[in-house]
Image 1 (cartoon, rainbow, N blue to C red):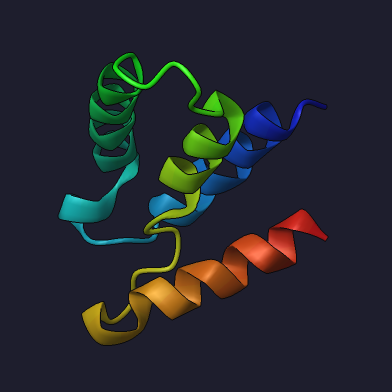
Image 2: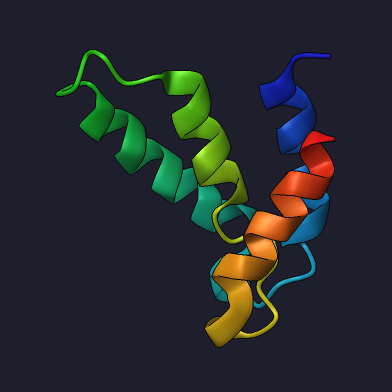
Amino acid sequence: MHIIKSSIQFAKQEYAKHDKNHQWGHVQDVMKTSLKLAKRYPKTNLEILKLAVIFHDITYKKYATHVDDSVKTAEKFSR
C-alpha cells in the first residue's frame, strides 16, 4: 500500500480520538492550505509535505507535549 494511503488510513483512526478541534477535518484544512502554498515553491517534495501534515497533530492529548508525542507516533508508524 502506498505510504500516503496507509498513513491516512491510520491517521483517521487516531484523529478520531481527539477533541473536536483536532479531528480529521483539521488535517484536511491544513492540507488544503499547505498544498496551495506549495504551488509557489515548485521544488517542494509533496509526499513529505503530505506526511508532515498528516502526522503534525496525530497525538494530541496535551498541548505542551503534542509535538514530541506526534513525532514519536510518526516514527513508530514508519517502522
